[in-house]
Length: 246
Image 1 (cartoon, helix red, strand yellow):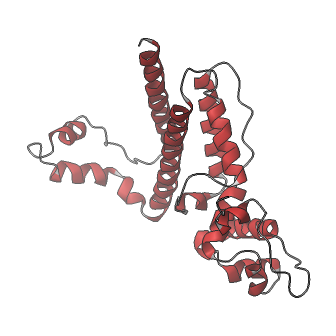
Image 2 (image 1 turned 135 degrees about the vertical axis):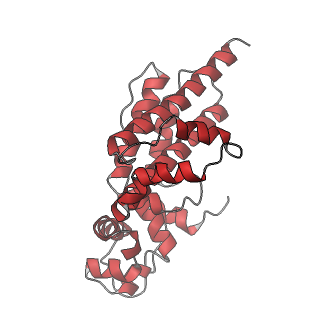
Image 3 (image 1 turned 135 degrees about the horizontal axis):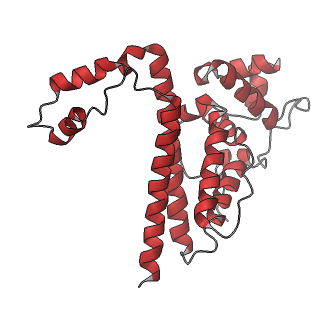
């Protein structure tokens, strides 16, 4: 049997902790909750083994009995921060994937730091796998092969993470420099975009697409998310149509 990496056994709660000394008063779940609380309140940069230990009122070494590194701590956080996946309506894969996508974004948005964590591999923690399973279940009544279902859900996860990161980074950028989102942007484009070198962008600029007092609007971000999601789902629908006609 293949030996599982230590971070996987940690996520699933089957990694043995050192038995020497007193019985540990902390659990990995305690550490995870404290780390998430620190990140929610102070941002991801504030999360360290020492800071989480202080949050728990323990010595830093007490954490190392359970969590060996900052990477392991981040793995616990990104799994533990997820809400349980929703129950999906049956019978319509498109409604199911829409419900799933909106729910996972709502779960992500409770934790602004989530977008800053680097994705280092496929989903493996219990909560991430529960979401993965629920997304796959939306495609259960389609004629897709199992590998095709995986490709579709993983592609959708990629889109969701990208939208999450973009929305948080744009919000932060607007807070720090709202002028960058003002009519200054359109003025700069009109000055520097040469239609001979960038003809497609020049047409967009000439059409007045960027001629607004501010280009940042949270409602616009929501509309952009729905637009992109529906384009992705339209692609799945077209793929299903092609498969059924062959």
